[in-house]
Structure formats: C-alpha cells, structure tokens
Amino acid sequence: MTTDEPWSYTVLFSGGSSHLRQLSLPFAEVLEAGLPDRSAVPPIHRTSASPLFLEGRHRNELSALEALAGVLLFLSTWGAKRILDDIYEVKIRPGFRALLGENLPRIEDANRPSFAPPKHYCAVLAIWHERTQKAVVVAVIGTSAAEILAGEESIVQVHLEAEQLLDREPSPDPVLLYVVEAGQTTGAMGFDRLEQVIEYLSRRRNVATVEDLGRSR
Image (cartoon, rainbow, N blue to C red):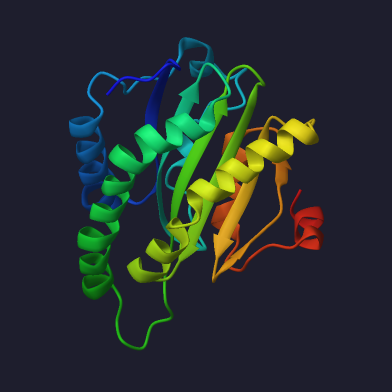
C-alpha cells in the first residue's frame, strides 16, 4: 500500500507473559503480514528525551487493566484522515478484530472463574504527528471482546475530531489521551509522556471526568 505521507508503526503492549503470548504476539504477526517493512520506531523516539519513550519496566505493571494492546503510528505530516482511511481501516482494524474476536474470548473463558469480577482490557490507537510534535492516544476499555469491539468503532472518529480540535486550539501537552468506555468518550487529557498515559490507564476502571484528571496528575 502506498500513501503520500511517510509513516511507520510499532506495537504497544502491557501485561503478563501469558497475555504476551496469547494477545500481543498474534496481533503483531497480523500487522507484520499486512504492513511489511513498516514496523520501526524513528531514532529520535528511542531515547529518553522523547515523550514517546517507554522503558521495559512499565510493561508488566498493570493493575486495574488485565492487558493493553495497540498500535503507535508515526506520521511525518498531519494528514491523519488519509492514514486512517488507507491504513487503519484496511490493515490495522482487521488485526484488532482478529485479536478481539478470536484470542480474547478464549482467554476470558480460560482465566476467569464464574464468581470472579470481570477483568478489564484495553485497545489503543496512538498517532504521533511529527509536524505538530503531538501524540493523540485513543484507548478503548471494556470487560469483554464485544465491549471493546463496540468502542473500537469510534476510534477513527475520535482521532479526526481530535485533529480538528488541535487545529483550532493547540495544546501545550505533547500527549493527549481520549478514553472510550461504556459508550462514553472523555475530553482530551494532557500528559507529558506516553508512559504516563499507560500508568494512568493501569490505575483506572471507569470513564474519567475533568475532576478525575485533576486528581490523577
């Protein structure tokens, strides 16, 4: 697939070793098959100075979330709509749906006793826009594959609305988070680093409010 905007991607994952095998690795394989030669983190984001830099120690510290899996896209120009139309819809979304439709139900059935409270899972699409030096992160949280699939339907629209909002009202924060859960979407929440977003998601279960954001920062 060709596009006018140079881009690349990397897979995001947080969770235990069993989820790495059952969720992250199959997801990465689907993406690599559909997006050959695009899996790469630009050198500038491999250092701790980058707001997107993640240390390995954060990957297994989830508490409220059982597992998080997603994609981080690196775009050299703004043009998110073209990328979302040509790449997410055609290549990445099938990976999400294979992950959620096939792997997650098996994990739910195998790992949760009938009396146990539901576990929460998170699917993420993050986009770094090099021109504006901003990352928009959309996190869909649910207790089942069906819930996350329903929320995933809104990922593209949330990203497009975030792009329009940033055009009108530039943000001082390099990373902006939107959470989709139980049919609701939060407003933008600002962070300095992507690792703070993952830590924030690991501590929460319910849709955040503006007041929640003030307590969590």
